[in-house]
Image 1 (cartoon, helix red, strand yellow):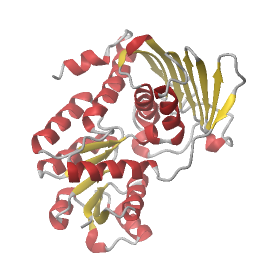
Image 2 (spheres, one colour; image 1 turned 90 degrees about the vertical axis):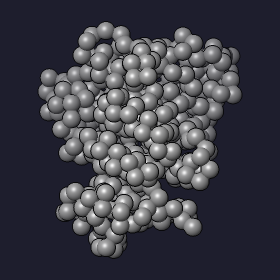
Image 3 (spheres, helix red, strand yellow; image 1 turned 90 degrees about the horizontal axis):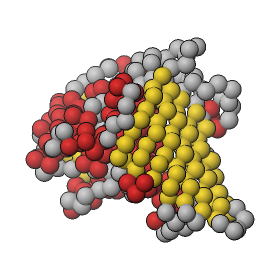
Image 4 (cartoon, one colour; image 1 turned 120 degrees about the horizontal axis):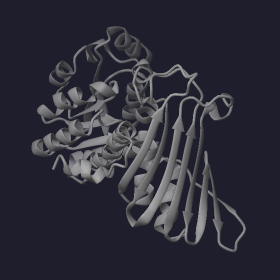
Length: 339
């Protein structure tokens, strides 16, 4: 029997999840909810969702559909409330990134889910992109040897974004950096031990403070990383839909360059070679849905569990504190404060 799912929040990501759920044999779309009736009606019409399956309130949607799980795709500042509603009724949760907008709330939600005996997953889908999966494989197989330095850069020009994100301070951290910081944790298989961050908006920028970010990170085993991200990079609006991404992984035996979808491995004493990412047989969202299914049916701990994502949330909070306090912050100490 298919697992019945309610999608909370019918913006662009909520609509993506409706399509993914419908395409996955293990799931059935039981309903959707949104507090904005215009958005709800528009999504229902665009996705052919029956009117009786649309609800203005998540709690009502859960009660009326008797669902097995909820996908939370509301604006980030509403994640905690929606997750609490579902978990209070022992309903499993898959929540969009960022998990919450505070580490304290994330810790509380994970504790509640564990007390209720239901899974909670965070849709950190960048870690499952083919480029990052290939990086993880090469590092795990020892192709680079010990990793010493990582450089990661993301650039996007000023562009139309969701109003809820555009109105936030530290928008690039919540909108994009949380993806990359999580992916770095995943591919390196190491936790972050130190963060020094600067968050700012360029003098001519129109977004609230924090549209650009620079971070220094230390990982376990003396790995050092630098990370830059901005929503204020002009002049390349017509390149790759305006987005530019580059990462370099410097190892003892080789250096790996990642530019957009291209991976180039430079081994000591050998000519550089292109590394293929392999076929994309499943979407990143489907990979997470498959983990969600296994967690629901067998209790297997997923890679993208809420507990795992507490490490990512601790790094994000360390960025915020470091930028504010102008000092290095250890994310592990932040986590210890809530244990």
